[in-house]
Amino acid sequence: MKSQRVTVIGGGGKMGRFFTQWLTALGHHISILEQNDWERAEHLLADADLVLICVPIECSLEVIRKVTQYLSPTTALADITSIKAPAVRAMLKHHTGPVMGLHPMFGPSIQSLVSQIVVVCPGRGDESFQWLLNLIEGEGGKVMFSTPEEHDQMMVVIQAIRHFATLSFGIFLSEEKIDIRRSLDFSSPVYRQQIDIVNRLLTQSASLVVDIMLATQERREAIVRLANTYSRLAQLVMQGDREALLLELKAVNSFFAEEIACNFRESTCFINNLIPLKESLIKNRRVAENTEGIFHEYSL
Amino acid sequence: MKSQRVTVIGGGGKMGRFFTQWLTALGHHISILEQNDWERAEHLLADADLVLICVPIECSLEVIRKVTQYLSPTTALADITSIKAPAVRAMLKHHTGPVMGLHPMFGPSIQSLVSQIVVVCPGRGDESFQWLLNLIEGEGGKVMFSTPEEHDQMMVVIQAIRHFATLSFGIFLSEEKIDIRRSLDFSSPVYRQQIDIVNRLLTQSASLVVDIMLATQERREAIVRLANTYSRLAQLVMQGDREALLLELKAVNSFFAEEIACNFRESTCFINNLIPLKESLIKNRRVAENTEGIFHEYSL
Image: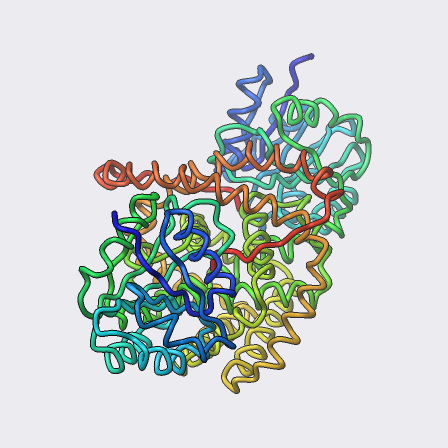
């Protein structure tokens, strides 16, 4: 394949660096345009085959507007923010050439693309991006097509709601001053999994986590609905309303029934396979504790 | 080791059957006393070396009172309910012989005891239970000593709070009519893990799940506090109070800091090892879907 000229906007950020390193390693020519490089924008953008926008979510629309004035109509334009409808709309509006919304469902700490998902929201001129999608799939990644609207709706749950629930659980444990280490001694593998999930979220950039929750009115409202569900159920618990809780469980059971059927087997196998793995990790814990921790951003 | 005469109270229930089968396979003489067997209680209890109470949580105190009148002072008495302080207190009060509270942190569907935890709350005459603890450890299980009070406090979080949080998350997804299957297509491994956790909880006995949440006033109050935490944070989200949320994250981060340090490495390795496993499981999904599902109770 012909070597591509790619300009990564925000190439100094964590995901920007990830794509820069990955594409460079594959033999492409990468330029980086950072916050203070706009005077060189013409030079960095006019000849690019692909411009990839990797900037924080709250700047993405402004950066799209700024970038597009320098692009040639043949340049392919893509962004990687976690909200796709407004970004794809803005790219289509301000750029006449090929446009694609991307959302890599992983963070910059991954070791390989194997089994990692990239959501793809086609805008215009898909064929200009085919080399990139082929690279992702060639490295074992998975390309998932979606409309921007479906993507955004799914991310309300997959990102905003889940982060909120995980974070709140962690905050509750800290408010209650639970001895986490001791609680893990008592715990079944599933509790350990849940503490892991809290820990992973806490190793993320705090502002990214907060911005993902706050990003849209739709997300904020969904979070409030989630809190209302918790409150409603907590009231049933406080009243000791066993019958009402059993009815709730019955309803949710039938909703999940199909998923449970094929998932339970997976999950059992999953857990059974985790135990020996965890065992060896715990044995190595003392070693890990004596090593200074270096944290990476991790897949949301 | 000399073969022991063990009477399992509630030996027809799921955990009762588990212990019956396990101890029988190891060559011990097991008798079962079920709800309608009380007229044979004298015969079933008087000569037992160990009486193991495996009845639903809400009957355990009554059953302890009933059982103890038939015991000889040399009979070892243990129970396996998930609330230990009142059970151990009642056993010590009504029985003059050896007493031990046990809480197996697993469900009856486990394939082996390897890495499974049994919490042990010593009451009196520990040496009479040593053969049982040796058996558990001999099969790869882990014995965790605790006071009944510490155990109960830990279980507020490990069982009641966690079940409530998981269940509420599942109920919210059903209220929002999320297409779970489709959402998994988009998802990172961590989201898949969380859906698994919901699924696993839903395969449990509904009344066991509800009773675990309702069991004590302490648990109910903790659940209400959890709901309050969610509400408080949801309000910050609704107000778009980025600064306050960042402060919350900062506080919880320093609370979890120590745990994160040694856990993140575990967790990353964990996730990296899960991916290939999940892949092969997903490939087998079609097969699983065409097979009728048989569900087992699973470790809480």
